Length: 246
Image (cartoon, rainbow, N blue to C red):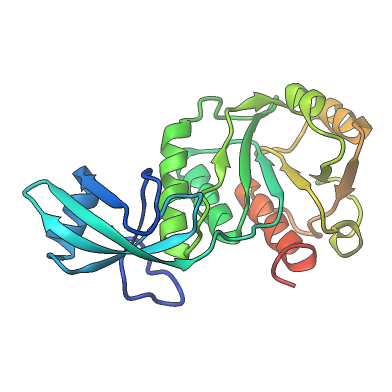
């Protein structure tokens, strides 16, 4: 199934590459990227492509050579600087594969800087394939115009997350039993939103989270939300109230 087109529409194909980009640099593509540009889009020598490397912004490149299974591009000029993303991290309890994939894709589109899978007592999926999630984040960044790809952290237990976190980064705990209104709780600055698994946190986990330094329990409203919906609702609200949607 083809990916849903990004909005607003952009006419040039856009790819993430691991080659350091700069004016005059040469980028060699093979495998899926070369196949996509050459066989799917039918681009030939002289065709234009937008590239980003996650560190130097976005660049316009021109196809210099097309081979059977490879392609060479010449970088011409920078079209956009590195984006300035709000310092927002999202910690979430993994759910089923399709739901986690969707969560990572949409969190990337919304502008999250780092994603942290957290294993709780009620987490139903304990094995998280970080490589696959990283690929989903890359594809989402390509589609939505981001010049940075969010980091996908290794899964950690809830206790480890609480003990290792920086108290200077406010932890907004989406507590299904109730908490402060988002309108008064969310504020600019380094932030970490924590949402729970299907079935919610246990009473013991909830007590441990609330007792941690720098924690602000918040409410996501009067309705019961699915785990992935709660995570994205929290991110969207933070971006609107304290992030770069203001």
